[in-house]
Image (cartoon, rainbow, N blue to C red; front, side):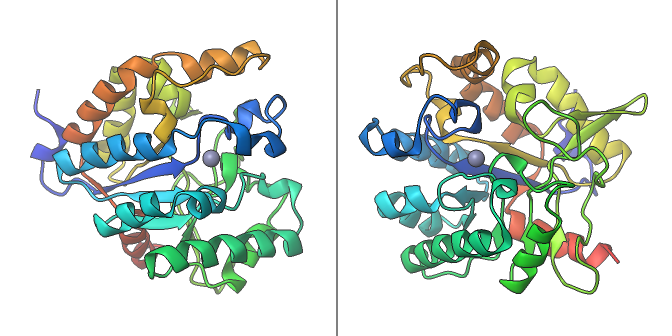
Length: 291
Ligand SMILES: [Zn+2]
């Protein structure tokens, strides 16, 4: 079977990495306190290195949505990401979900993170991804704050029903969340089957279920709908040796630890079989299409 890249006119998809460590994921929030982070083994440097090698091998540039907390502690890693031609964008300071903040504390979180990232790379931060896709029907003010802070795009909405996140009524593809502003929201990819939406842009869908399902879903979006997909993963997902978090809910542990050893191979296929690029470039193309 031909790879999707063999066909002309196939969209370039957005590839993104959410730069956070194994103990910072939303699913472990109840068992790993933020105050404990400092004492835990940080594996993000080595894992980012693996991800950078993977992208270099495929000649792909991507976007790294990075926590300020990580950037402040591991600036050399962020420098390396930027030096290799990837986009460094914001994932907030310490993974607080946006609907737990208010407009003022969200603005502070954005400002502090951006200053840290720009101070390291010397390049402007124009994109934002909310921790755990935490912009939804509860906090429409969040997009307005992003406009006030000059962001060009956000990729913070999961337009699907999910146990940890989701805004099922949101559009599946790029839209302007604040009328009259240039900000574009580019939701993470979903597939539609018989009128039902499925999260298909990474996470458990990609790592836990067979690769063929992700491949099918992204093909549907690219070839049948003619639209770009947005895919995300985390550095800890290519690290089968990471420490295990005790006491987390069973469902979270299953989702977090299943198939870690297969992830690298799956990513190899995904990168080889579709076209991928930075999110800021995708945002520019989408902004030209969206009224
Ligand atoms: Zn995250």
